[in-house]
Image (tube, rainbow, N blue to C red):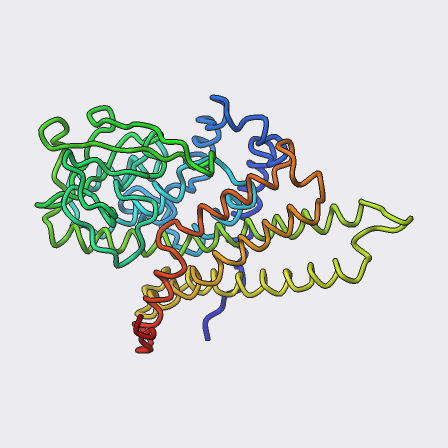
Length: 372
């Protein structure tokens, strides 16, 4: 039977990441930094990625990484989700890194992997944030674009592209590594300001880049990167939901009406108890997805689909309850509850909507959806 409990090493990693974030990225200070240059802290990223070694958890030691697994990366994402930390960990250290790990070893691939693992550079796969595992990726990275491929190869809603040093660009003949300075990156205004979006144009004529793989290998690598990203996104959603529940409990204990804590009112106790059960279920689903990815289980796509279908809903519900149980305070810009709600809503569409994952789940268990 799979052991989903946290190991001692995972608990130690959690303690190190939480201590770092408590000193550099406390959610209480986040609202004041939202629209300032201080939002994205380069020193914090260097400490997390390089000093703690979180960026290289998925990379084998012989290729310059820590030789850990998706379980350890999931722990990091839980803590980043709790604090809604503005850092390109999911996009660079998970999706882009896992995409590169799926490619055949070469000087270009191994050199870039070593740079990412050390935290010296960051990379982003140039597909829209909403692209889920199994979604076809047409030429020039225009995955899932509702209106079809842009004429100039522009890809919209690419997460963390404005923070990346390298862009991994799917093209007709394969996957290319393009220096971000050679591409056109136009920032967009997202709902969640802590995960910036951008429109990226990396046409071959202007940004040829280095070819890393042929078309078939590129498609398989992109699928693997998106699957790992969706699976570990569930851990970010879990961490976010846990913080929202804990913050709601803390506030209702300290807030008094009629000379008693509002948290002692039966209606509120029932709401928080129900939310606790949802978070416990989300923990089991997220841990199962991380373990399936870590062990290379053939059931990994199924575990990921279940985790995303469930955890995305729980994160949104937890954030909504946090806002509502704080009363008027929860509706203010100064309280971080609204930031968690925006991240939860954005994550609900990231790397595939719940509907996408439900369709995947139905296909995997041979239970087709009713005809529309």
